[in-house]
Image 1 (cartoon, rainbow, N blue to C red):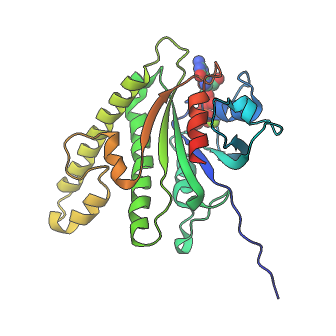
Image 2 (image 1 turned 135 degrees about the vertical axis):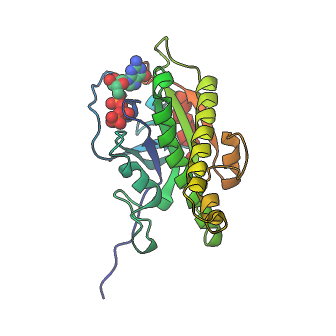
Length: 261
Ligand code: GTP
Ligand code: MG
């Protein structure tokens, strides 16, 4: 008898977002407690195993990560991905798996174990990078929306929440979280609008394209303005919280992770 090794995999949080947002710096901070480590732009996905305390209370990630911290703990993977425009497939693969024969296997485990996406962006340069930052976010949210839709017919996958980490608040040019939120919502709405026009202009019979168009429309179908609240229909809650990896100001992000694991 050949015994099959039980396929175990940890729940995981995916770090996504444009290049230079601070994903690898955040991972290093959470793993080592160090804000002074120099990072290089990432070229591959990378996972570390971390521990969260499941006890309520204002415990910081520094204390929670210690093995001798009191209370019960849960292990999870934090998966870092490259943000470069040509390497974003690495993050998308973590969301849906390799797709072979409907399997959700990923490099580090199983896409079904995805518990949340932490989308890290540089809030100090958002004015200049809004189009790119929003385009990538659109892809991530649409993939999650499709994932939720696919789950409706079979076993519904766990709700996946998205935290937009507005990083680099230590810089005076950084936009506050509320502005990051409204700027992204407006830009996502513009992207949605232009993509649906593309479909219509392509000359394909719109009746045939109907359901396909509906499938690639982000949020509430046919609505004029996009808001993150529209994602709730797909069990996706989107929050925007500011922070600074440089200053070690990431406790609210850590709390969010703790709530997802
Ligand atoms: P890719 O790997 O290219 O996708 O980028 P990344 O998201 O991993 O960014 P990374 O962590 O490498 O950080 C990019 C740069 O931003 C580095 O020089 C960091 O030191 C810097 N950085 C990260 N967080 C902060 C922050 O909170 N404030 C400031 N001022 N700089 C930061
Ligand atoms: Mg990186």
